[in-house]
Structures are given as structure tokens and as C-alpha cells.
Amino acid sequence: MSLPEPPIAVLAELTHRCPLQCPYCSNPLELERAAGELDTEAWLRALEEIAELGALQIHFSGGEPTVRKDLETLVAAAAQAGLYGNLITSAVLLTEARVEALAEAGLDHVQISFQDTEAGNADRVGGYAGGHEKKLAAARWVRATGLPLTLNMVVHRQNLQHLPQMFELAIELDAHRIEIAHVQYYGWAYENRAALLPTRAQLEDSIAVIEAAGKTYPGLAIDYVVPDYYARRPKACMGGWGQRFFNITPTGRVLPCHAAETITGLSFDSLRDKSLREIWETSEAFQKFRGVDWMPEPCRSCERREVDWGGCRCQAFAITGDAAQTDPACELSPHHGVMAELAAEETAEAPPEFRYRRYANAPETAKLAQPPAAGREADADQPAS
Image 1 (cartoon, rainbow, N blue to C red):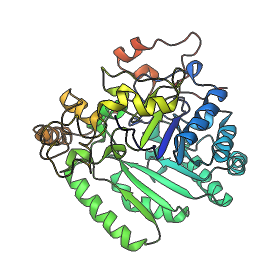
Image 2: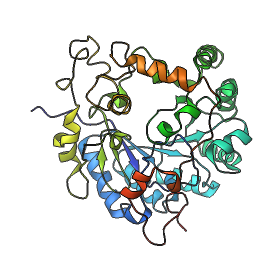
Image 3: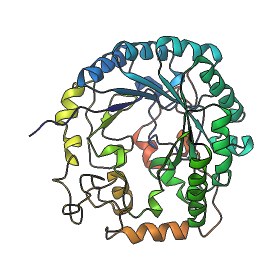
Image 4: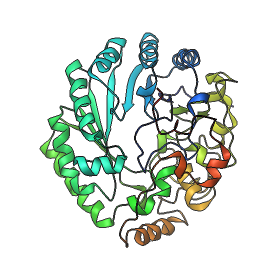
């Protein structure tokens, strides 16, 4: 067995605690409790191992990573280890002093998520009153420190009408990059698909807006991917399963992608029990869909098999019940028509109410799988005191 190349990037989910309640959150339905989170020492050891493994980037995420009081310590350790540190944040808990402290600790970049450009709808989507104005203030503090800024605009059926204003906001806030990130339909987003999936007409309009923005704002880096439910070919999710990236959950499980736990039947090793090198190189979960040997037809003989790596395993599982199937986003998949039918059906009616990201809103199976610790009923939805 040949060893894989070192990962390029690692996503460190420091916590699942978050004051926002976004209905498309990428966290699992089974939200981890604060009591089970890795402590500072465990994260410091992980950062050392990540650097030794040869990774280049560390992305501090959550939940909301700024609920962790040791964030500056972790940022400083990452910088000391030579890792490029990026903070992925809702920004609603940031203060000007904390932004300055993070910059002084060695943070390299900040990515702030926005739910819309119109405050009322943004706060409704995020389930957090006053959040939009806090984000605007935090973005200005970030730029005042000299740190580069990316705006992550999560787009869907209920905010795509403001796409032109999203580019205007990026310019106003002096952002270096904007990500027009269509919702990925796993976990909470899968539960809210009928409320979030855009219509085909919205998609076609958005492509025209993005093409025009590229000409209007040549100095702004624009990232955009067509939503999978309207794609003809799959994207190389995370650069391929176990190829360039891994994710560490708040409790220390190591995943090939942030949604991998949606695939039932797979078990994931923990950095509490094994080194990150051992997990990256030999873990059964990482080996399962790494490379091309696992692929069925038509992937196995496709000329793009080492370009898209068969697409997304989590999406294949969500749509077909089998993670080893060709990603249904591919027009060559026998299940491609299912995605088109779902898109047509779920966008034909008015969007239903959101099922917000709250512990109480998780399906009963998820609640039973992880009963709340005594006295910590709000941990998943509230920052620690």
C-alpha cells in the first residue's frame, strides 16, 4: 500500500456551540456537548501533529470558534508551527479588542459568514436578532488590523434575490474574496431542503449576475460552484475523499470531510487514541473511498475519475442509500434523474418554515443517540459562560 500525499488543509471544529441557528448548518444533527470537547492541551498536540504531517493550512471553525476562550492560544501555536491560520466565524461574538488580539497572536485570514445583505432577512435566517449589524462591525475591525477578509455568502432560495447586493457589500467592506456558496444538502440542510433549494430560474439568473460581477469587480476574487441538484458533473468534493483534507470534530474524531458522519456504517478514529499520521495514512474510513479502486461503473472507466474522484460520497449516500454509488450529481449516474425530480418537486411549492439548528429540533434518533448531560441543555445553542 502506497502512502497518501500529506493533506493540504485541516478543518478544526473547536466546538459545536453557536449563538446562531442557521437551518443549513454543516454540523451534524447530533451536536456535540461542551463537556466532551477537546481541551487546550489536546488541541495543541493536534496542531503539532498537523504541522509534522506536512499540512499547510489550519481552518478554525465550529460551531462558533470564538466561544472558545483559548482561541488566541491555539492561533499562536498554529503560527509558531508554520501553519497558515484562517478563522471561519459568524463574527457575532467578536469585539474589536478580540480581533486585535487574534491578529497579534498570528492569525493570517478571517472568513465571515453572512446570511443575506438585508438585515431583517439575515437575522431571520440565522435565528439571531441583531446579528447582521454585528457582522458588519466585525468585518470593519478585521480590515482595520490589515488582515485579509473573505465574505462567505451562503446562498439559497430565500436570499438569492439579493445576489447583486452581496458583491456590493464585499466591495464596501474591502473584502479580498467572496464565496458564493450554495447550500450543501447534508445534515441540517437536508432537513430544510424544501425551504432552501433554489429554482432553476433563480440559478440561471444567478449565473448571469456572477458573470457580470466578474467584469464589474476585477479586483475581487469570486468563488462559485453550481448547486449539485442542477449540476451535470460532480465536483471533486474536498479534492477527493482522503486526498487533500481532513476534519477534526470537537471531541476529536477525524473525518475525511465535515459531513462524513452522515454515512452510517462507517466508524472514525479519534486523535485521543491514535496519532493523526496513523489515521491519515491507514484509517479504514479514509481508505474506504480514497483513490479509484473502490469506484463502480461508470466512474471506473471515466476519463474524469482522477479529476472529480467520483464526486461526493455523502451525497451518494443521502440520495441512494449507498455511499459507494456514483454521485447522483453526475449525468452518467443512473440516479441522476432522481435529483432533477427532487429539485422540480421541492421548488414547485412555497418554501416551508425553517427547522432551525437547535438541539431540540434534531430528529428523535439523533437525540436518543446523544442524551444531554445534566445541566447542559443549552450547550449546543449557547456560548459557554
